[in-house]
Length: 192
Picture 1 (tube, rainbow, N blue to C red):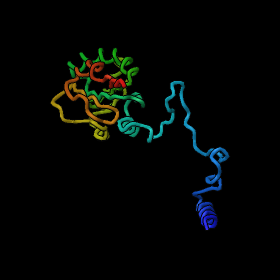
Picture 2: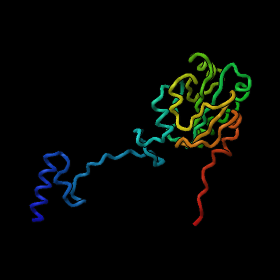
Picture 3: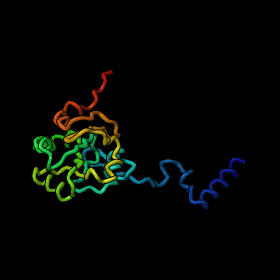
Picture 4: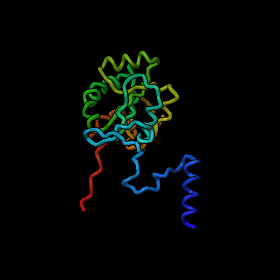
């Protein structure tokens, strides 16, 4: 009776395209059909499928950015509201640009939410400061799809720092970005 059931299950699976005789074979003798994901030297997955991206990285991959390519494996994201016509923004920008390489090494990505009227003005603002972080205009409806993004603020510069899941860590004045090393600390491992 068991053999008949097994045989019928096997035939049904083969015709349905779901099961193969190899599915019932010994694990060592079955052909390997799983797709192997390439590992980089550091052991991280090189597969950029949406299922492997954090919610913020996935949202950014679905947005047409004006410039830059976001760091896919970032642990923190800084949504920085800034503009070329804003004096405090221009005062803050050189320090952010200076820290940006360190930020990327620590898996912190800056996303400029540009308040300039045109994409060309926002791009010129970034070029003026030699900033290569990703940028989207504030008026682009896609900006509202960013996890953890908030449009509730009184003025610019303004920064919202979120983790990769979109949980807000800090939401305040743009100078918060200068405190990124304190704010974006990795959680300490507990000793056993």
